[in-house]
Length: 368
Ligand SMILES: Cc1cc2nc3c(=O)[nH]c(=O)nc-3n(C[C@H](O)[C@H](O)[C@H](O)COP(=O)(O)OP(=O)(O)OC[C@H]3O[C@@H](n4cnc5c(N)ncnc54)[C@H](O)[C@@H]3O)c2cc1C
Image 1 (cartoon, rainbow, N blue to C red):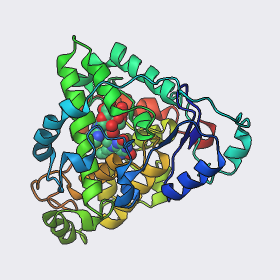
Image 2: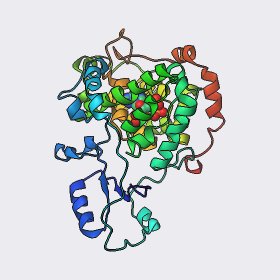
Image 3: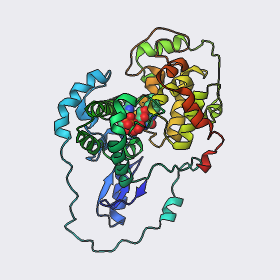
Image 4: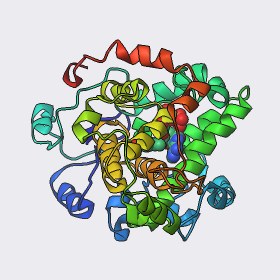
């Protein structure tokens, strides 16, 4: 990912061999500031000394071991917050002027040599870059934050921050978001529940992916979860769908289809529905392994915030009970927490959400 920002001249986002790339760029480009944002869970530990890590508290500072759940990491994070929630320094003018003028960037050429998936269309609600992220943060604080505590689990309400794409891409730091949100004095309950998500839940996801090499497969689940999924692997499935049927929102469940269409059309599914969506994939595919791999594929392929520790942990929580406990045993799920359509109906107006996305169901991805 290469883009220009008002203060930082070039940002290179590498998924592999950042050290080699850094040396190469140092030799060839008159770079004034180089920021490397690492997707840390894809990289060897050596690279983790980068000072630009996107977590608020770097996960290796927060805890030196794999944590069991939010309750075991919350205290550790809270203790470290005063140190890491420091003031963000203003960007100074660089004291040295460049001796050479940089050649203008040929953006067309840059775009044409990127090896990226082009079948997924662009969205129009999210402006890339830190200015776009800051604008979304301001609109959250002005319009949606006060609804967060009470309405964040209602997909018909616009109560979420929508910040995950910018946070995931390193274009907006959790530190800046927390500091801005905490200035809001008239929504204390919402500020508390929002920081629980952005700080505690997010750090917990980082902790899982950092300390568990099997963060994206069933081997990474707790023993009780592996056993219960195995015990129920052969249970009869009333519905079985392929990856293609799921991707094209062709199931019998109109709520699930609407959520999938929201993901395809908007590049982001409502947080509450993400849990229902992934759990139904477990129910409607031949094995937990297949379910997890399809959920991760669809999430990473279609979500603007995909390929993120939060995504792997979200799928692992839904399908393998990570950071959760065992529940009453039932078919297919075993002791993994179950969610169903009737439960969603009790929480929000399911028909309203279905109607909203039924209206746009025939729109193809590319024309979004
Ligand atoms: C199956 C599944 C897949 C998911 N995939 C992703 C993903 O690919 N990328 C991603 O960032 N999140 C993912 N999540 C977690 C969560 O759903 C999203 O972070 C949230 O919906 C993003 O929207 P928002 O920024 O409007 O959230 P808000 O509710 O406004 O939350 C603000 C921020 O808090 C953090 N946050 C919120 N919920 C969680 C959570 N449960 N775990 C960890 N951090 C959280 C995120 O950084 C988010 O941007 C997934 C959850 C599930 C169940």
